[in-house]
Length: 422
Ligand code: PA5
Image 1 (spheres, protein in one colour):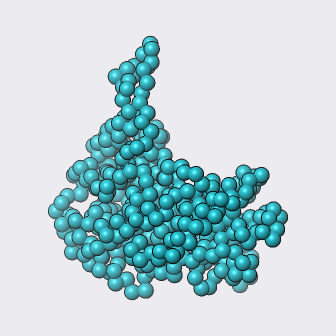
Image 2: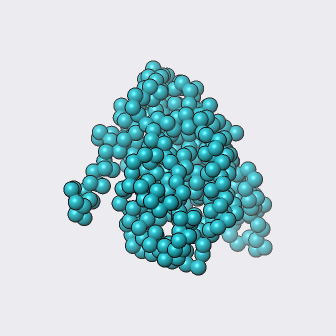
Image 3: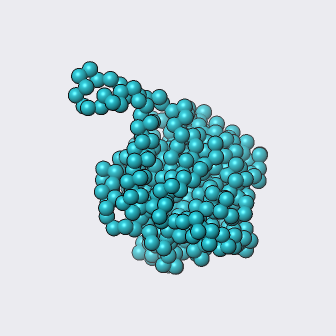
């Protein structure tokens, strides 16, 4: 099933007339994106053009890692880990390695505690960094290499894979010297658009995910959303909605009623935050898990400052666990009217009740019916949001593919720590 946009809770906030007025600028944004001279736009054609030999190599390496390791340590930050984590948390658990993420902070506790979880278990490592010089993963990689070398000695090279830039980059030379396995991040694909490259696919394969099906979903996404940016194209329609709402609602909240989509919402925060937040513009992206956060943020969303709009990701429970509310002999809790009803039905009722309440409270709500919890759905969603986000940037007049503000902090950190030449 392909995803559907349910716009009923946008009524009163975004009208069809306003959307129709976006048609011209939207088409121009689509053309700008397609032309995009010099822009890193390889992600747009990646699913259809994905090389079969590379797919086989990734699947084989994933299988080898599963057979030889109980834990895969994935070292990376930002676009170099959020997509893999989103996929692994989203997909139902399959036999595979436990994938643990490192190098996404400078916390000594996080590093030490993750390595402690590896004691007594067979470990493999995938370090992911396009530049090879980002401080957090580079430090974590040093610590992990040291630990692995003591553990595996000369067998180290069978257990480490680097995913990095195809030509330059510090990581690439180290990888060549040490004889580690290597995968490339295409030069024309930036970090936050790289989930469907080896950056995301190798950890997913090692974790037991079906990367061929993930790419099939993305191909479906390319067919449905990669064409002309007209209002019939749901990704383009979302871009127009986002650009219209940006005028009065500067906070864009991504939410879901399934904890397995928490990391997907974190991936969306990075995609939208780094792509659109520049030149003093762009929505502030945030995430919430409902119904959990209705008991912490719910009051604010319903009645606080009117500044946010919601994108709700809804999934078809499909073949998920068929839990129902069991009977209770004395019926003390007043829930007898729910006895025998599926939890999935109650969860959906909570979503519809909340969407209506938030809409009535002045919050524009867009529901996305995304399909089942499986690889195809996720592949399509990745492509859908990458397209929608890039088009929103073009509509808003910002470059969705750079991140000059991230560089500023990196340079300051180098100076503070006394890096020579900074
Ligand atoms: O989206 C991006 O480009 C960034 O978030 C990068 O992925 C992040 O800064 C990590 O960079 P690198 O892969 O070079 O270590």
